[in-house]
Image (cartoon, rainbow, N blue to C red; front, top):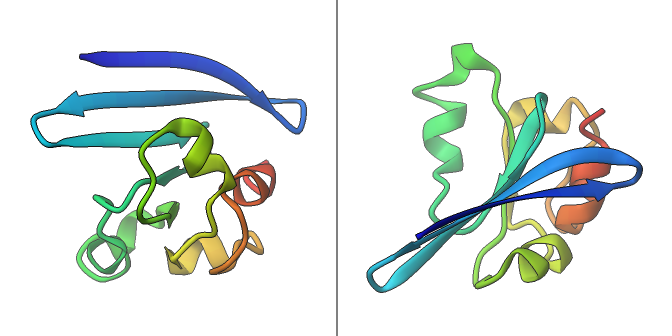
Length: 100
């Protein structure tokens, strides 16, 4: 099952997506600038293979819900995300507020 939920963070609109798969759940929160995602996100791929796309993204691991994704510290971020001041260790919510 796929669930799409509009949410407001720091006065800005985002879309939360939950994809329930066998034995795992994919989680993302995004806007037109970038996104945060659960541990399924491969930051190395984004930074290296897809570097020309300049993707703004962060990854949190061990999360099972959108609420946990928003509260968890980011474990890794893309090079492009760093240009927005997004850093490893900041919460998902704090990272999203910088995507404006």
